[in-house]
Length: 331
Length: 259
Ligand code: SF4
Image 1 (cartoon, rainbow over the protein chains, first blue to last red):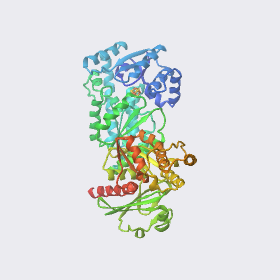
Image 2 (tube, each protein chain N blue to C red):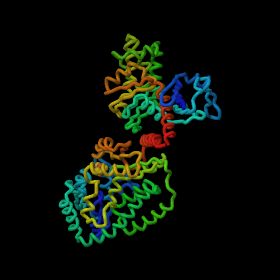
Image 3 (cartoon, chains in turn green, purple):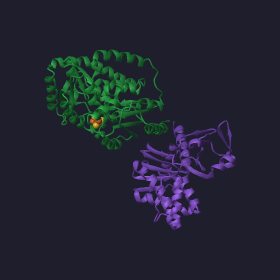
Image 4 (cartoon, chains in turn cyan, red):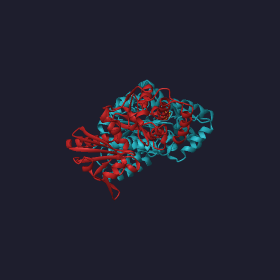
């Protein structure tokens, strides 16, 4: 088993310990430049039109790339994945199930990760070795995040891209680190963004709209917090944490409450002026918007995306007006 | 500090003067008169004769306008019209969460405001049948005043074409059938409302704030109240954009003196 596709962040240490190459299907789907074609081919295979585009993208990406198996996350991500897994299996794809236990109980997590280790035939020792290698990389990613919000030098897109890539470390952690160091030195050499920029947080699933970060910057602001992407990095884990601890403190698969605590902390620490809440068309997480707006206490702009590509004219105008008024409050 | 807000509309120019935090004076003059009597255009920007309009005390000017009317007024801060109207509604209603419906002479806008900030909008400037101009033309056809037109909302005759031009033929058809002025007027008011309602529904919230010239139309207010929770018409709906300009100027001034 060599190339293993992922539908979301999972304990990637296990795969690396087994000598597999992890491939986050989401990343290939949106960066490959063939997003719309992939969705169309999934629809030809019978996926409904009124279904989240990510699911269709994941399906077709796995089918058209040389992937030996897929880790299907059955719990804690998306209920659509459960049905997706069955379709994959019917097409002969090997699917290894993994679940983030909704109880968030330690024993249940131990069981899930142990099962994954058994499937990949790796020992705890091997996993720990990988963890030692990944720890410094995660710390460098944390530094890149600080270069974004504390030193005000990295762009919102860089922050997004590097953090979101921590789900699979682009398949090769060593090269990832090398490239990351190059990027960090480049960012360090820059002069900081203006003090007057509008500082935004981005919450919700990563965007299917490709130019959101660029549009924010074109309107005199910057995204200095990417909530879910940051959660993907596991950078908050300490060097002493076991693999079970790391994935127990990971917030994304669990309830919104825990995420809101995280977001509120970032609002204060990163001095955010407003929040962009991204929701995906046909995604159950859109309901969370109700609580997000009630509880965050700062202006929230909800942007819904459907298909991969650039933002439409209305989204652009909405973002422009929102940021324009935030700037009035700030000046 | 005295701040003058100006909203240059297609039919009328609105002026609102703030002193400190309060609105002191306001006027509405026809756009034609504004250009003819009170301003000269120098190198593409408008030089105002503030003395002639009676606003020579202003220390600062904030202005807005629509499309080609969003001209550079000399020494003024120019802001976009959407924002001007939202600030106007924030000042006049003291609400923070609402859906603003502004029906002007040539366009309408529906703007959703949450926490005092614009979060969504639907704009229409392509369709004359969804603007104040439609009412004016139809009133002219009936040979009645806008005053008379705006009072009738009961038993509207059916006017179903979506186009301002064909709407006239349809109205003539209804006149020929013997309908009287009250039902014909109600039909005109209702047909405008019917075209705008789906847009409000898309961005609705608990409070609907109605501004623009058409906010003086009692029939439209009546229909809105039938369909929506709470309908708020500010005291000076037509001056809302100019008030918003002035109020933003006040906010900026407040920030500056606090800084
Ligand atoms: S965006 Fe929502 S519906 Fe789509 S895969 Fe993610 S969780 Fe599922």
